[in-house]
Length: 394
Image 1 (cartoon, rainbow, N blue to C red):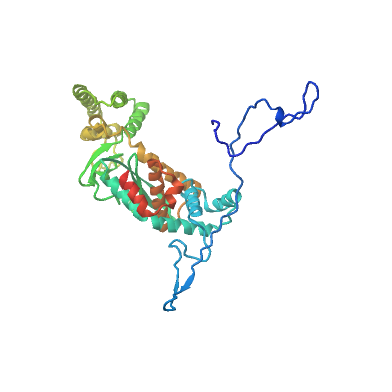
Image 2: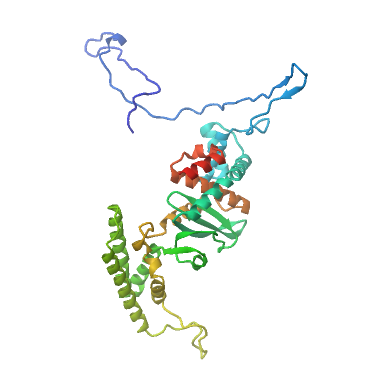
C-alpha cells in the first residue's frame, strides 16, 4: 500500500503548547509537517433515486397529443437500477454467496433492502440477456486452435446431471446436460482431455492427453505395485515437461534430434513395461473359482492397461512435445470446473434445470471477462451487442 499524491481529505494536527516552556502554539508557528494516510471505504450512502417523467405535449398546429417514451430499460413504476443488479449477480454467481446471506450483506454494507426472490429474478433476467454472449464465447472456443475439456456431475432437482466445460487461456464456456455424453459439436483443432472415451468420438479434432492424470496413475503403481517401468516413466514425463518448459521460456522449440531421442526413450520404457507384464501370470478372474469356467475377456492388471494406453496413444500423450501450443496437463479445464463444485458446496444444489443453465450462462460470461481482464461489474452492465463486439476484437 503506497501513499497517494492526491488524498480526498486532509486533516491537520497542531500541537497546542510548547513542552519546554508551556507557551501557546498556533497554526502560524508551523515549520513543516509529516504525513500519514489512512485508506478506508466510505460509509454506505442512501440510494440515488432517478425519476423519469414522460411528458405529453400538444401540437400547436393540429392539437394532437404526443407522449414521450421512457428509456428501454425503465419498465416499471419502481425498480432497481442496473448497477444494483450487476452487484447482486456478481456476488451471487462469482463469489457464490447464498441468496439469504446476500440479502443480508446488501442491507448491512450497502443499505439496500432486497428480497431473495428479487435476487433470483435479477439472475434469471441477466442470464436471458447474456445468453447470446455465451453463445458467441462457445463459438470462439470451438474455433480456438487448442481448447481444454472436462466434465463433472452435479445435482439438479434431486437428480444427477452433468456440467461440461470447454476453455482456453482467455475463454471459458460451460453447458449443462442430462447426459454425460452430450459433448459440443462442430469443434475443430486440438482438444486436451483426460482420456474419457467419448471424446475420441468427436469428429475432426486432434487429441492431447492430460499427463497429470498419467503421473497420478504412475505414482499409485510406484507406491503399491513397485513396478520398475512406472518409476522410469514417471521420471521421463517430469523431465520432458521440464525440458519443454525451459525451451518455451527461451521462445524456442526442442531440437529435432533431441525430440526424436525422447520419443525413442518413451518407446523403450513402454516396451520394458509390456515385457514385464507379459511375463507375469494372468490375474485371477472374478468369475473363476468354485468350478466355474471364467467368462469374458482375460483380465489385465492396472499397470498393463495403462501401458497399452500409453502405447496406442503415444502421439496424444507426447503432443506437448511436438506442438508448442499444447500444455502438459489439462489443469486449465479442471481449475475452471473446480469453481463450480465450490459453488455447489457453498450454496447447495440447483432446484431446477433452468436455474442450473442460468448459472452456467452467467459463469461463462464472468469467467471469460476475468480472463480477458475486464471489470466484472461493468461487464454485467454492458449490452450484449457491446460485449460481443469486445469479444470479437479481443
